[in-house]
Length: 174
Image 1 (cartoon, rainbow, N blue to C red):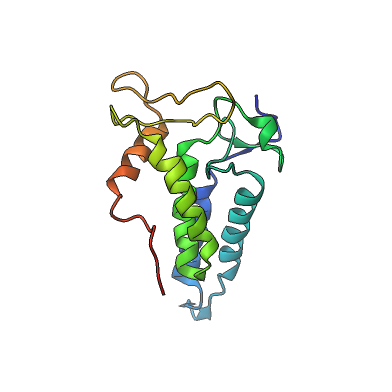
Image 2: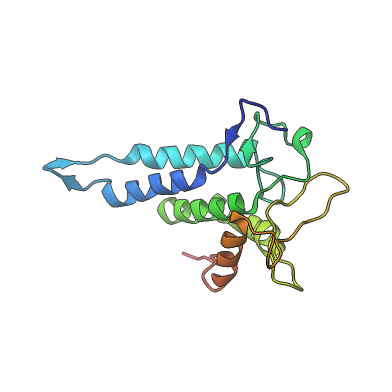
């Protein structure tokens, strides 16, 4: 189980919001004063680095029971409830936005790996249902949503992921 010091993982959307604040306000004049919103870009970059460096499995997924534990202890946290699909989905959104601003290829390298290993693999090819967690522990298997009695937040973002297949940024140039 999670420790009481674990950090809940629905943080990615907050940093996506911070990036939006940066792109909308930085360098603009509001009420006669020029806005320096560069701190919001730094917050998003630092969060991305923290997650990808200390809390991400080789698949690109992260978390255990929707929380970040201590840094660099992923092997000790491998369970049947790792790698919440929503986290991967939101980290892809954050990666894409950071790439648009910085043009740093590390964001798209992460995007490609996570998209293939966490998003495309989250859908049952026979039923179209999606996963909540993608277990990292030995001996477990994926559990998919069902039509009527297993429906999670990741079911919604899972459906959204597969409506965006033409929009994903696997190829970039320039």
